[in-house]
Length: 304
Ligand SMILES: NC(=O)C1=CN([C@@H]2O[C@H](COP(=O)(O)OP(=O)(O)OC[C@H]3O[C@@H](n4cnc5c(N)ncnc54)[C@H](O)[C@@H]3O)[C@@H](O)[C@H]2O)[C@@H](O)CC1
Ligand SMILES: Nc1ncnc2c1ncn2[C@@H]1O[C@H](COP(=O)(O)OP(=O)(O)O)[C@@H](O)[C@H]1O
Image (cartoon, rainbow, N blue to C red):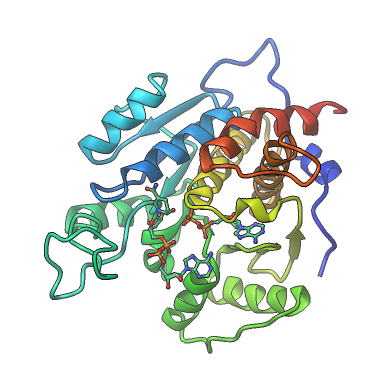
């Protein structure tokens, strides 16, 4: 496996805006995330995309989530339109169990229908996954990545990775060391035909062609709710910006390099946020990670 993704690697992917840029040339990222049960995931992803340095964010989701997104970020556009990359699935759950009622998730470990994807949600997500734009597929949309055709980056944590492998007919192989995890992730990527980001203390990024890298820029302080939703937003921003540059200038990067760069920014942002609290770091929230993304981006592009 390639070594760890570094600041120099991230620098090779990120670009400063120029005098020739406008909001569209810097990229537009679209979100179909959040649910009535998890509206916060929508806010976190959108916040991260803005803070990672994108030209425009479109949010299309449930009314309550949209209101919360606008309350946090009135810059966000809630009308449909052209995008260069999508983020889907954060804050959604694939389906409700047959006995689901209106109970909130967590009452008994069950998932109520307000968290579960509706038939209309599923149709909209399938439409996005049959398009040409790259799609970041998170949490409650991971099952739909199987058999889809859009260029995809899927973002499972360990348990979601095992479930994805089950859907692909692969054994639930688990590995302790990073080389083993990378080999398993590469197998998943090949079977899925998509780039796989397996989240954890060390995050593995694997492409279908066998290329893989690890990202160690984070901190254990990242183990807190919602940081995965922030990562999905950062991924959307990095991929949409790169796709806009590819359309305008023909400059192309593989989805693995783009994904590893976003994971690096996310980990570095967390390390900066936690490190600002003292030598041993200190507690951070998901929004703190999003808030520190501009510092991580600035650090990466400083020596362009
Ligand atoms: N503020 C919000 O709206 C938040 C919404 N979230 C959303 O909540 C939904 C469910 O997320 P989860 O999968 O975390 O569901 P749960 O927290 O319900 O966890 C489901 C199962 O996955 C396991 N699991 C959770 N995280 C893991 C990890 N990092 N590694 C290994 N196993 C892990 C748990 O032990 C549990 O057995 C997703 O749609 C997610 O986007 C979460 O991101 C938390 C914050
Ligand atoms: N011990 C850890 N050390 C470093 N990073 C971690 C650790 N645990 C989790 N993370 C990171 O935190 C994020 C958690 O994402 P996820 O599991 O999707 O949580 P959530 O669903 O609450 O957003 C991922 O980016 C993961 O790599």
